Image (cartoon, rainbow, N blue to C red; front, side, top):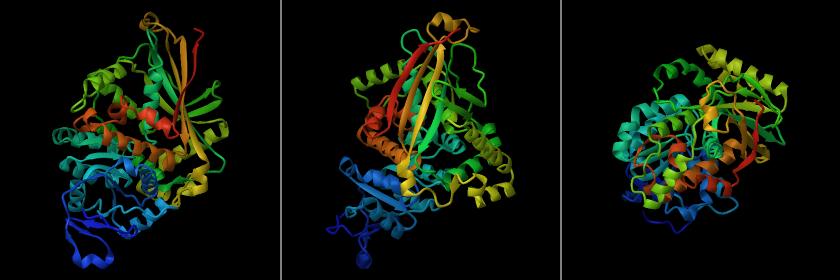
Length: 470
């Protein structure tokens, strides 16, 4: 592709034509066959524009970046926004529509890695994954929609392996902090110590009241609609052997050591950790890379040999019991009304009312985003020795607490995570699986993703290790 000499010039690409600027549309020529290292699809959306802004920090790490979507003029405006206060770099803007299979295939033929930010994914994501798999293009997204992820695994895993397309969903706040946080926690159970249960408590902090994005609320509502179908079609997986009795978790729990109440959060995090542990049960050394060095083979085997399975759950945490009842009321409203078409219409028509102001169609302001942060506490109970673990009715005698913390979840942490995953995929492709539909934990667990996240503001900490009274 010929490079523009002017920073303000915008490229347009649709099917097999590429246009340099409005004045040169009549001089369009056939597009070359060169590929972009990454293409961000949906870069003008709520989250996509923040992903683009994060990607611009790493322009020198990629040979080429492009952005794509339906409205090229809106994408050009987004590029200006993301680059400020600097002038926008000459990044190609590609026309593509998630509802147009031909434009998606043309897009994927031009991409090595596609970052999909177009949600809700149960509505718009399947054609994008199909196009990537057909083209042998690697795919990352930021969804937290369990039904979509499991459907993509069922429908595309075999062909993705064959075509060499690596498909990894949930490469944002859903669900990398939970997955990498669980793996980090699990590896603290060294020697004969064995975890039994790890419960994550998610705490949100902000100097201002932050309003959630409507897309997240819509995904939760539609998840209720698809709940029965998801359960009926759920893939039967091999379950890991976990020492000790199964935990009797309560819907609401209080953790004195971290000063938080927690209510069970029906998120994708627990499902993805379960998928990772199931894959690890079948492949104890992890999934081999397509052309790994001997050093990486040893590193991968050493990493996964230090991971110990445990029952895992996630709770939404708060220091206020009153907030807990608010979370429960929102959950009840979504759970009841989300089962009926009229109820879903009400929820999606008036998200602010039914979430008590927690979500809106406008999303959070830049000031709200800047003031927010998260902490995810991992509280693990287990056994100090294999002998105690083997005595099935014994209560755990050991506790480990770890924590993952970082900036605002959806518009700061999610772009950081997605771009770091893309950088690993770009620079370490030979060490990763040839293709297939996998969890972020399986693909990135043994890489340097944790170190990269720590360098970019998402930190991992061991808080305490202690004995429990039995």
